[in-house]
Length: 152
Image (cartoon, rainbow, N blue to C red; front, top):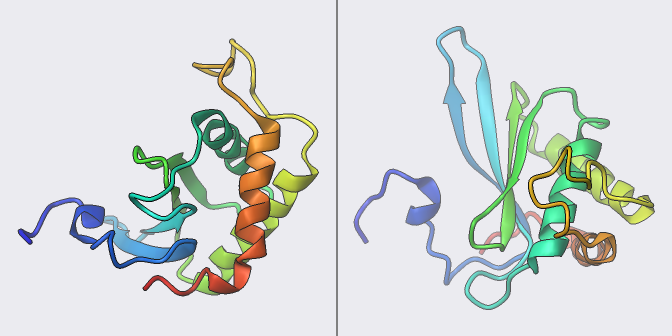
């Protein structure tokens, strides 16, 4: 396989075992700050994917609630393949801490009564949401919490 510029294009998606959370890479800035990028894989690549309304709502819920558990979250965004999310954090090299942040955030999702920013003013596709779908995804992930560290 030819080496690609995008890290995930170099990952053999036929060998991974979802769900998992893995460190994708670390980018160091000119002043020494480091951005840690994680792959939060929810569904098995090329076999399953998240439905868009559930994925979209889980993104909103995780983006909003994760910041209650970590003050250096840069971004949480969905993968185009709809099998997971990328999480970027600043200056936190503790994998265990990130696992705990994700766990706590998913527990928040289970307790949510609405999807944050689910309206036409704050969201670009407000009609495409499912709180119940997001909660089911969170439940599935939490039920397999003991598997998150096993990528292959």
